[in-house]
Image (cartoon, rainbow over all chains, first blue to last red; front, side, top):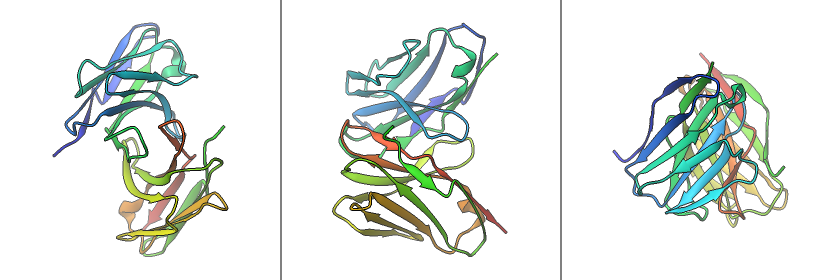
Length: 113
Length: 110
């Protein structure tokens, strides 16, 4: 089945220790998104790639970076995680950038100790 | 903030009852979408309604959209325990992205 896969499902990192979360998709969608979701809150868009074109949200901290080496894979790098970065990180894809439904992965739960 | 708001924040019903949740938003939209999120999991797309549509059905789901009031409702009929989840509305308009509402936590009890 075509799907969005996130690894790992649970990640524990130390304060200030860089961490990378990965996302892959078999849907061959053009757009990939990264969201941050804290407990009982709505998902907050961090950035998205339209093909190779990177689009950062204005309020996304510089601590968060992303890479998309090819259509199938996208990575979220947190350069120096703080306690406030503990959250669920959701990867999503959509066929195109305009107005299509999004397909989400199961998420990576990040804990910062 | 352009985030939509949903009410109620939490809803508890008995199995077999209908559940209605509402979403209000602030800007003009191309479409409005509803997603379900089970605890600790990713979101699952449920239904999309375009701005020129007033009502849409999918199985036990019924969605209405009133663009003059900038509001939408999601009705789940004959609810089941498996419907227990958080439900989010999301609007698609300018900026090539979805803006999610605050969510409604639905609990369906046996």
